[in-house]
Image (cartoon, rainbow, N blue to C red; front, side, top):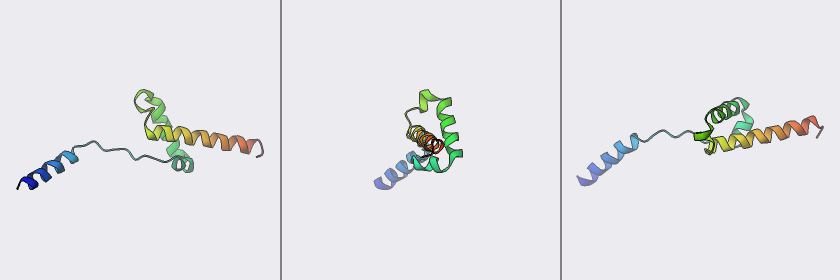
Length: 77
């Protein structure tokens, strides 16, 4: 009975935890520029809270990668 009560309590506590946002890799926003624009927009609108989140860091890296690719293409490389 003790274990059952403990299990029910843990189940209730875990259902109250906040939902976590999906963490994107750098390659995912590179492939989908619409999501990259959306993520970067959120990060730049609230840099105090979101600047050091994995999604913001990965989106900034993806943006840098896309900019380098565009520069290479424009220079003929």
